[in-house]
Length: 220
Image (cartoon, rainbow, N blue to C red; front, side):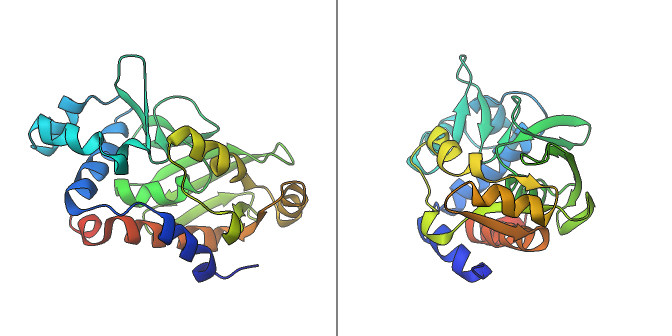
């Protein structure tokens, strides 16, 4: 199994390079979505106390638009791994039922929201329920205790140009699996994937947050 630095190197090389203004808007968008309803540009601008025109320019930039899903009214319903529309992984924060695009998202989003999340998912191999309590600084509770995470080998990691492409090439291969045996069986049938421990998956999630948001995350 590759070590975390080997996995993170291609992730960081291909990842978005956000300037401070983009980081502030992105974090604000995560936190508005966490309220449980679609987010409009003017709503986010008001929450951040930034002119609507500036917020729209940032959201429409290549850096952020590739992470975004909209509904038919052009409101934002998903961004960077978090969604207010139903997906495979239920993500409950502050009484709001949200969803994440993949298992790994459920490990890095709590730190971005600075809150604890209750996560409910299903092992794709055994069909057993998987439940976690994820705090900003670690996984506090997990059931089953043997839960692991499927991930992509470094040579397979890439950031796609649009959110749907990322869903297809990455998110649809990253799951919680109920045991190491289940994880090995599932990854053997899915080329380019391997098993990460839950601890390592969370550590990798923290590395991503630090890379994307740096000091802005620590001061918001």
